[in-house]
Length: 195
Length: 195
DNA sequence: CCCAACACTGACGTCAGTGTCAGTTGAATA
DNA sequence: TATTCAACTGACACTGACGTCAGTGTTGGG
Image 1 (cartoon, rainbow over the protein chains, first blue to last red):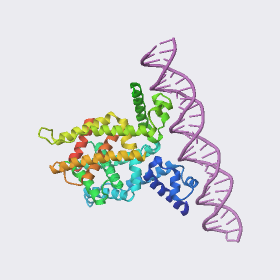
Image 2 (cartoon, rainbow over the protein chains, first blue to last red):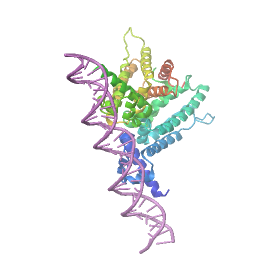
Image 3 (tube, chains in turn green, red, cyan, orange):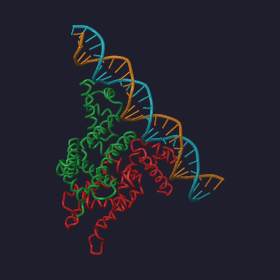
Image 4 (cartoon, rainbow over the protein chains, first blue to last red):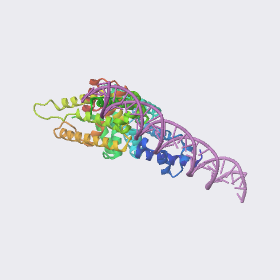
């Protein structure tokens, strides 16, 4: 892949991300994307098979980066406390998401129900996230850091709350200060809502 | 509206709900819907303007019913404890959602990004839900039942966790026993995850 | 400077799904 | 039984987004 092709490809992906975030996958057309990029319709097809492929690539990339920013909790003697490590993980993901609002909109709210094959890929991403968190929680329960309870349900609620907060932050419905968001999430994990 | 028309309309709505839940809004066609109902394509247009209108009606109806099943917390002397009332509210919504898995799939995961006007309606539903919960939390904070913190962020996280749990329950990713779900939600609200 | 390989163009044919409407059915009433 | 009209049908014309490809630049190594 020549540098020139690389750049054009990047331009198309960026334009597609913006268009999808603005109009949603359904309403977006290939013409919108090439229009924003400033190239002809045919050029698009020199880089991608169709609208769905670009979308899938955007979403998959983003999820991969989110997953990559999560570090397993270390229990070694010299390691920071699990709470600190948890907070650091939250901070990294929140920071990444705030830096890429378009991807958050696409990936967390419009990605499902678009295409059966893509749904499959997303489901498998979530499945591994669930497994990872389930194992983390199991360790936490064993060492008395996490309260008792059905871990699958805990994971569902935690992921859902997390994603919703990020969506709302990115869409402007709630303030989007990184530290505040992380504090709010930690507080929820530490003590819920009720006194 | 004659009883016969009423019934046909209902049939079309039910079929549409199933089709949307199966294939998602994008992939679903009017032919799918009339095919399942067993009527001709033209009949559909005697009852609805287009695919989007049916979808909007399904989603709006469902949200209205969910909203209608929530009762404000009573603080009077003879009333049950706020915790009991909260649990009862959770129970009613969970029960409604478990009884209508198709609507949960449609409304919570595929409804966004389909159409600008529908997004608007959904946003306004969520806005009033947020307002309602914000006011409830404010009262709770005043009487020392809810911990301190930015209420908007609390509401986001709570709604997100709630919806995700229901989606996962309906899709079979986690067990869908009503009492277990309500217990898990209450536990999260009562003490989060960490000990 | 040349020209071959690469990058790009945009008019065009295609097609899946749409919405319509002239005609048919059948239930209810006189 | 005749009459009426709401309910329904499905072939048809239409739309707009899609993907293609023959032809037009553009670039850089020789």
